[in-house]
Length: 254
Ligand code: 13P
Image (cartoon, rainbow, N blue to C red; front, side, top):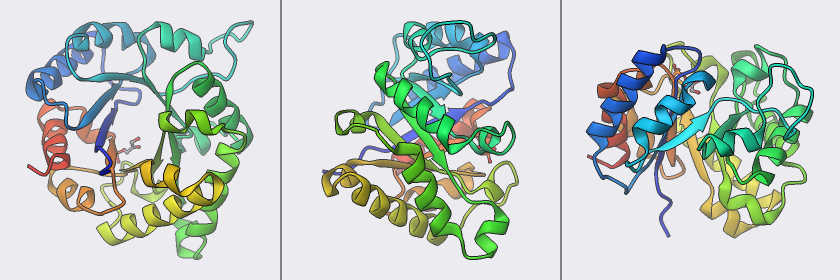
């Protein structure tokens, strides 16, 4: 069965309460009742409630950008998986390079986050990707294999239908320099094979793998047209309803 395309907007640490509301309204209006593609909006924590309200009668899903791997306790400043679920969140991004490299999150803590989020019933968008230095020294596959294996160790087969992987080459994020469709396809096919070895062939066949890194309306169709590219995790171009909707249409093949 063909995998459904999944387009998610990662708003990162941008927007304010009003612009978040307006952006969500614009996407809701433009998407209408189109449900042959999955679409999620991942605003900053303080606007989760606002966006939840705006998307409640639409096919859109709510996503969060981070989570702490414990459900409750003395963890000042952190947000738990059960709190996110309670707030109406369906997806949570784990392992974004801005957290791996910017905030120093280790494979170990990311694995804990993946498992805790899945245990709370959330869907996880697990991000992996190589740096430019790693690509240039031919380590791309070994990095992708390591991050996938370390991040997903101990994940039970029963929750695999709620797991999405996002391939985000670090050198393509926010740089305007996207991976070529061939580079994306090659990495995605490799990730799928690693995943198949970790779990099984059926799980690998069903796995949605998003590409992220400078996806724009003008490159989305060709990237999303690759056989192993099942969607996009979009940063900058998700901050305008028009450009995000154009990427969604590209995902629909329109
Ligand atoms: P850009 O689309 O701005 O390159 O960001 C990609 C990204 O990091 C999505 O998570």
